[in-house]
Length: 168
Image (cartoon, rainbow, N blue to C red; front, side, top):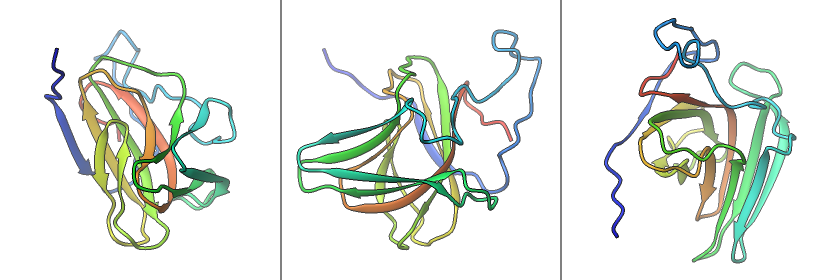
């Protein structure tokens, strides 16, 4: 049987989104919220490195995040043709409608193409922080940052929420 992706959107959301509003409109989860844990502690075992072929990935925790604290992780990937390097949250396969986001910046000013979850995004070609989001309704391997090219990025505050809109 064939598998088709039918509902994906990617857009950058400017502004400060660290603090999340809650709503009583979603009684199942008692409000909209980030369902990921350890999003400021990338040393936790829930965050794992996946490699294929001759790829390598180095993570450096304790990097400056968009708000000046040391909670981000730097990911330096080396991927030859046919290989890939990934860093992912190891506990949240889902087949529900979710929206995921993260603050990501290129450390070199290159606009890398990379996977944010199961969607390819292209980073802004600068060294500034940007918040990227993807909305997915198909089966998903979860929150991940994956590279099929050499890349040097810093990631902060990954988030996954049920539904189609991010909290602010």
